[in-house]
Image 1 (cartoon, rainbow, N blue to C red):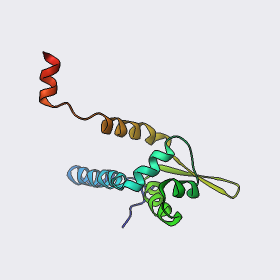
Image 2: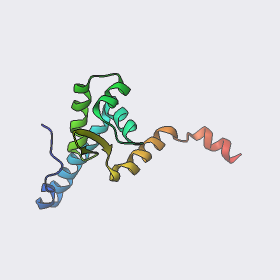
Image 3: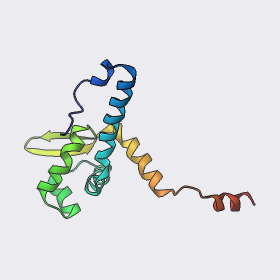
Image 4: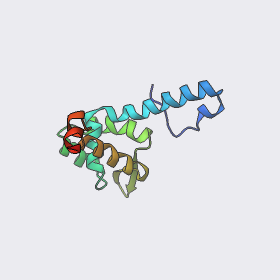
Length: 123
């Protein structure tokens, strides 16, 4: 069952231990949104500019239905927003998630320093 993240925070009304468990569960669900390669590709396409479903489908080489299936959890978690201009529908990365995505990409591009590397730097 997919959670609607627009609902009020139900965790706030629970005892401390249950609140922590509830928050951790919610955070795991949000981070799970990033676990599919097509969702990450969609986010990478949206980080520069808003796009329509046919453009996303062509860029990923998948059907429009597949794009909509992957946009649903991104919209539910408010990672992606939707804009209507006349009969056109555009999707874009929510402003609050741009920094997180940039950090995530930076981590992926900078492998952790291993011990031998540290030793070489110290010599």
